[in-house]
Amino acid sequence: MISPNRPARDIYQIVEAIVEQFTTLPGSQVRLRLEIETRVPDVLERAKVRTLVESANTLGFVEKSLE
Image (cartoon, rainbow, N blue to C red; front, side, top):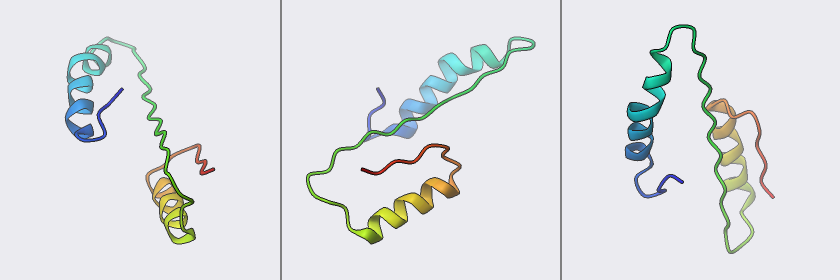
């Protein structure tokens, strides 16, 4: 799990310690997947949902689901 308070730091450490070890191997193919799971206490406003979906599209997320 990556801390939502400092995700950039945690992701950097993962890349530096693990991903780079694989990417330096000849012929290796590395895929990374980021999954975000969130629970909110109330229903999201339509504007917030639209913003989140547009951001996910812009950033290239493949699967987007807001329930």
